[in-house]
Image (spheres, rainbow, N blue to C red):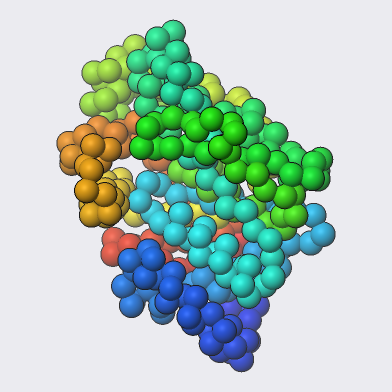
Length: 310
């Protein structure tokens, strides 16, 4: 099913790593509220994939891009890969999400006032600090500095924290796991933007101004940012219906964790929210599988059924 990855580890190595990592895995599963069925994925998916990432690292920092639609599990994948690579392969790993790189609330509201109201909503290309993201990856790859500051975005207040509250890390980084729903995405042809594909575009972007701006941003600085990626991993969801279902499950978990439901969404609000990302998500599902270095196929039960390696 995935011979390239399977050959990287002998049965004895798998058994050894399984025993060494058993307690950490159980701790991780409890923290993420994963059921016992997830444990079987460790030997089958996550350990071979971690070994593959480790095999690609040499003397210079390695940047792995991880793309996945909302609710696909890219954060869980990134966090577990980081843990395995650190604990079993002795690598220094930075987990960097594109969600860490949003523009400030003030900046986004300025874009909303001058370009289009939909730019108030964080997430689409044009709402991230791409220049800062490029600088961070440049500094890591070129070892420009002894330490760098990573922005901290607080979703509860929908804003960046002040710079004196940002995280400082040393540049002793072997591997960066750079994940996000649009990481590695390509822009669409301009003629594809003419017709709206959902109610949000039809009603709130009738003149295609918003989606044209987003596509232009994706075609510009975002491609420079994504050029820093050495290898691209894609979590391929089966369809957009699954995206809504799984993102809704995430929202339910968030409601269980927080008594204050002010920052959670109803099903109707969530449906509208996902429409902001539908166009680029569909574009990724169409064209990214043919160029991703590693493709993780996810079925309707939210299980990774196979790994394909280019």
